[in-house]
Amino acid sequence: MNTNQVEILIVDDLPDNLDLLRRVLETADFSVRLATSGQAALQTAQAQPPELILLDIAMPVMDGFETCRRLKADPATQDIPVIFLTGQGETENVIQGFELGAVDYVTKPFRTTELLRRVQTHVELYQLQRSLTHEVEVKSDEVQDAHEHMARANQVYSSFVPREFLTLLERDNILDVQLGDQVQTEMCILFSDIISFTSLSEQLGPGDSFRFINAYLSWISPIIRMNFGFIDKYSGDSIMALFPNAADDAVEAAIGMQQAMAQFNEKFIAPGHHRCRSAWGSIAES
Image 1 (cartoon, rainbow, N blue to C red):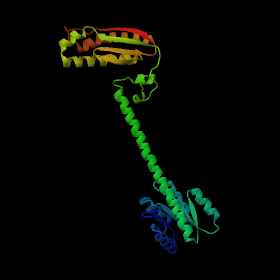
Image 2 (cartoon, helix red, strand yellow; image 1 turned 135 degrees about the vertical axis):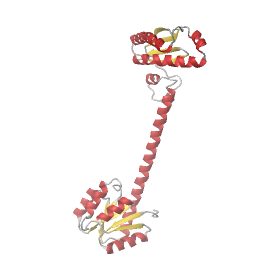
Image 3 (cartoon, rainbow, N blue to C red; image 1 turned 90 degrees about the horizontal axis):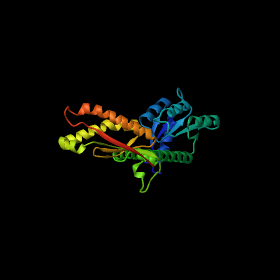
Image 4 (spheres, rainbow, N blue to C red; image 1 turned 120 degrees about the vertical axis):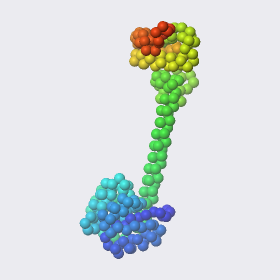
């Protein structure tokens, strides 16, 4: 293991213990920080989390158990591995330490080889955990980006292919539609166009014709949707709408469109000008 930049926090109220542990770890090329109390350990760990904490249990004011509990309660430090430093024969202390979230313990007086092996093992596990967490976050971001891209693609394609078509084909994404995909079902088809629109467009000119037809379509399209239909295609002033539920939906939509024409003419057509009238028809298809 490359121990460069790997930082260990040692917490003990006895200076001799701190000095001995520091020398052992620095000999193995670890970077070491020291804390002489539980409160000092919390402050330094929160300010700059280390890769591992060696924590003495028997300390005044705030012992190792309480220090560990607070470390594990803080999101900034809860994942840092804690190895307890304990005296011989303190089995109950070891069990309590594991229950608080410690990953291991070292019995004092410790053997240098054992101490380093335990420290190296848990540092490697912690680094692996962080690496895996980072990879999961990256993959999650990639999945989120893919979902957003798919949503944008569906939104763009919905201007040309009705979303309802994807629903009928049981597809979530327009890119999932394959050549030859089809479904057989009964539905009613409604055709509608404006009577004498060619003559009307010649009178209006190109710019006014576009504004007129956009206003007309925005006026009647909601009526189709309110009656459980959707528009399959536009062709100038003509539309073809599909009603997958019932033929009566198409009839209700046609009646609503005819009624809307009277209101549309009052709002958009000046007195004395050609009135807008729509012609429609419907057929049941399967």
